[in-house]
Length: 90
Image (cartoon, rainbow, N blue to C red; front, side, top):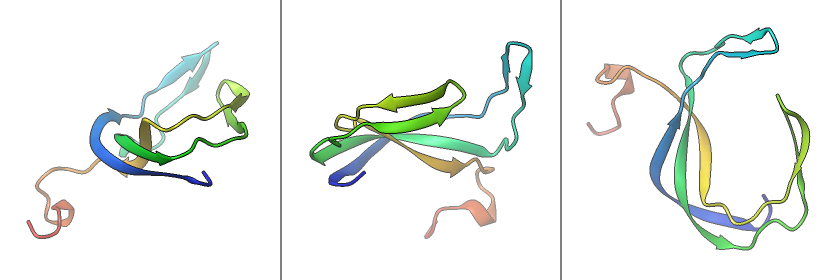
């Protein structure tokens, strides 16, 4: 988003993959380790002026953005305590 900046606050939500059944169609989980972490934001700057187009399972849509209150970032689920997944310096 051009001209919009924010600082990340605390992680407040964890979005996990889920199976979906819609009108008889089944969408399985393709990557069980994939997730999104949702952070609170401390916005500065202004909102995006023009609408943003999106394409998802609900079809083609248009969104008018305002200042971000939450932001989602892709993440991986890992087993806690593994040597390879410990935070640096721990």
